[in-house]
Length: 250
Ligand SMILES: C[S@@+](CC[C@H](N)C(=O)[O-])C[C@H]1O[C@@H](n2cnc3c(N)ncnc32)[C@H](O)[C@@H]1O
Image (cartoon, rainbow, N blue to C red):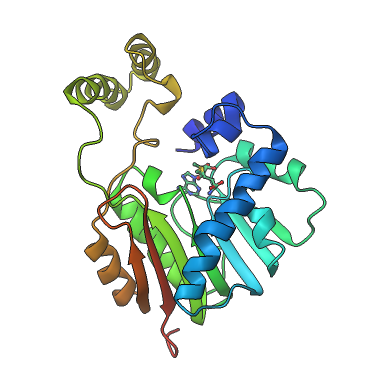
């Protein structure tokens, strides 16, 4: 996963972070992060009657800090994790003035370097949807709850859509690319992707991650000491879960 994301960062970091545009300039890229916080984060927390400011928050998969700078205006300290050294290098450079953001290299599977019960808010957007295995996403969600303080808020997006988003030609093309990748023929897999008109940087399953059924997320949250306050967009690739860690849970 790290190799793939480092490569994407080198190729066109802003596009692979926010892929709805091919070319971004820095100002519009950062403005899109602020807009997403205002459009997606603040209303969800307000609907769930959860605070939008606090002492400490954690963002999982911060990329180049598109949204992180906006969080840094609302929280005293932001712990921004990403798997990719290249993404973090860009984030550090862009946001060198922001002294309240700690940019941290993630190990890709857990938050073991963060103390339990230490965060007021944990957040993740456009990250869990890329994880190739459901179990990895589950492990991260458990970890997000572990580091949350009792009464703290959790908000994350995941891919809840199981309906095929491609026609049979697309599925066949990706099937060929994936089969080559699984056989460890990575260069060939990328070449096949190019030849089939697909993005070679998206070869390997770290781009098209596993979908997760919303009821399984709710069950997991409850088992890990959380409560779901709101689930939106279930059955779609842009599903959101907003919850809280139950008071009295360690
Ligand atoms: C599509 S970008 C989204 C970045 C950011 N959340 C945003 O909306 O601007 C996905 C980010 O997740 C990171 N990522 C992918 N897999 C990860 C993992 N297992 N652990 C932590 N970060 C991961 C990638 O390096 C990349 O920066």
